Amino acid sequence: MAAAGGRRGMKAMSEMLMKSQRRTVTYMPRPGDGSPRAVTLLPGDGIGPLVTGAAVQVMKAMHAPVYFEEYEVSGKMDKVPTEVMDSIRRNKVCLKGGLATPVGGGVSSLNVQLRKELDLFASLVHCFNLPGLKTRHDNVNIVVIRENTEGEYSGLEHEVVPGVVESLKVITKFCSERIAKYAFEYAYLNNRKTVTAVHKANIMKLADGLFLESCREVAKNYPGIKYNEVIVDNCCMQLVSKPQQFDVMVTPNLYGTLVANTAAGIAGGTGVMPGGNVGADHAIFEQGASAGNVGNERLVAGKTANPTALLLSSAMMLRHLQFPSFADRLEQAVMSVIAEGTYRTKDLGGTSTTQDVVDAVIEKLN
Picture 1: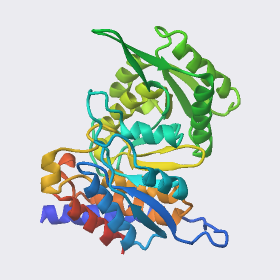
Picture 2 (picture 1 turned 135 degrees about the vertical axis):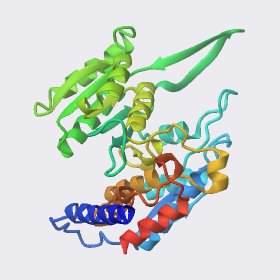
Picture 3 (picture 1 turned 120 degrees about the vertical axis):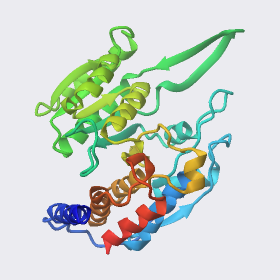
């Protein structure tokens, strides 16, 4: 009886959540805004086909005005096929699962190739507490924005002599200013109060010093937004001790990967954090935090991968395509399922399969 009462209470809470989040201001479209949009779909490796398949099912169930051009791409390939690049350039938007990145061996990452070729200079990961999902810290709501095209990910490495490898870290004023402007613009448009630059300028005085100098110059143009700086190692310590102090964080490439995955772990895990990569003309939406983005064989075999992150990333994509009501519906349905707690995958303490979660989300949409 007590358990039944608890379930009824959770259901009532989720219904209240959906009602409270309902949009009260009408979105006034321009003529033709409702035309279906083509989206390039890359299922990827490992759990990628499971979670992208989940997103496709939900999109169809809610009759979202998008259709997919699907291509098989694997991280084991030498490069992204030409027809895939042409599709993304034509459609301007892509939804993708994780692409496995070989460790060592001189094989370059297709994820990095995509970002460089399409100039997706900004990576955004949103790390926040989901209602009903218990974590060590409450009131976490952090957006990590990292520069996506240079830094340690430039891939400029060579063997000087046998046994000695030189790897170059490239930082430019152009890219540093560009990512700083994006971070401050994001904060301004989303009513965020603080932007924190993450760096190691106490050691890399020229490279990270240039990054900080660029951030400071851009900050002057946004007097309504507080700006501060933190050294990356102190940043990680502060994240795990008091994450609530952070709002929007802007970082060079490598630090951003570390910070985003740390923040994701604090707020509920990589399976629930949405994200994307964006440039002036194109955008790719995927699971936000990269750690474990292709899962393991047991998740694939048992079909128990958590689709939450990619479903929330799909909502980000819908909003990017200017379909805000569809984005709201999808987000509210996902949040409601998480809040009720009946259908959760193993990483969230449950026993549900990917399809169980998808079916529950679709039921909330109806």
